Amino acid sequence: MDEIYKINLTILPTMMQICILNLQYNRQATNGQPLARDKYKNTLSF
Image 1: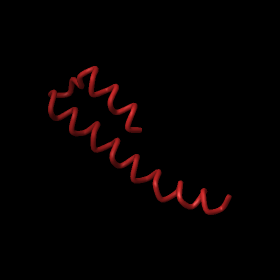
Image 2: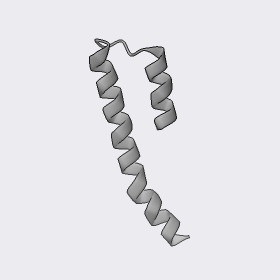
Image 3: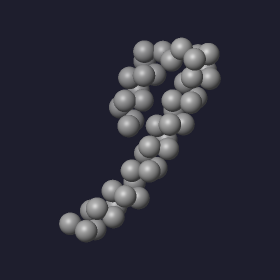
C-alpha cells in the first residue's frame, strides 16, 4: 500500500505539469480560444 502511494506522489505532479503545459500551449495557439478538440484532449491527458 505504501509503495503505490509513493508512486502516485511522483507521477501526479508530472501529469499535472503536462496538463498545464498543454493548456498554456493551446491558449497561445488559438489566441485565448481553445478548440473544443483541445479541451477534450486535455481532460483525457489529465
